[in-house]
Image 1 (cartoon, each protein chain N blue to C red):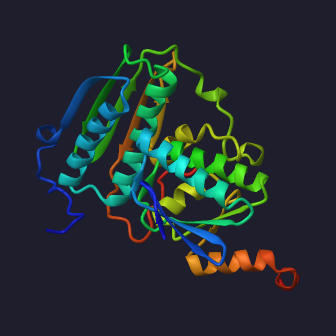
Image 2: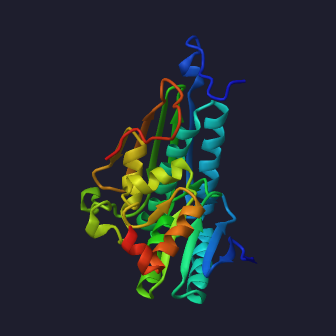
Amino acid sequence: MTKNRRRNDSDDSAAATWRIDKRISSDPQEGVAVIRELLSHLQRENWNECEIFGIHLSMEEAVANAICHGNARDREKSIRIRLETSPDTFYAKITDEGGGFDPQSIPDPTAVENLERPCGRGLMLMRCYMDNVAYSPSGNSVELHKKRSPTPPSGNCEPGNPP
Amino acid sequence: MRKFDSIVVENQDGISVIHFVDDKIMDTKRIQLVNDELNSVAEENKTGGLLLNMENVRFLSSAAINKLIVLDKRVKSIGGQIRLSNLRPEVRDVFSITNLDRLFSIFDNSTEAMKSFATRKSPKSRDQE
């Protein structure tokens, strides 16, 4: 089997839609379990390694932000993770129980004066590897969208949406 | 060669060459363990060099990168030096995207990285750069 084999055009996209809707505690291990389930699914569906890398990184960052910043690691608070993939798209919505934040308030981590500041890179990486990253007005929910590449990439894994 | 839980360290000409055990550095506890063990090596080799050979690392999160930034700052503050080498293309991309290839000295392989330590140490070599 070719690793990057794509589905036939005749596949029924509605039937191929895969969903997860889970509520987890603010325990990183529970987040890891959900992400593993997602990655296993993407591998089964032959998404290419570069796309899986970008989705993996974005999910790690989004879930870590929800646990650490949103819920402040409070195990009494939960996180809702909704995932949906079709043969050609990836979608995730991660919602925490925190007070939210203003994404515009995060300083640009690539600015020379901020390079040594250990913060702000998670959000930036999500924006680079996803086609769209949208926060809710209250800032406690983030949606990630990515379209699947029409052809497997050759060579290095270049992010699809560099800053 | 010294084996820690998350890293393996070998001494080459006064440089601590560090290899990572995990191929994915993302779990909060493992990130903290890596951080503690790297800091322990940095403490022992205060004014020497640390070469982080990252050939085994296939994935690292921004939380892991943040620990490296703090380590880099600390090592530089006590007169030491850090180099990174053998990054996989996808990991190298993460450093490029975040502009951290301006903060860290990144080399394609450990031989080049080791040479850079020698260059830095030798005034004569520095003049030739």
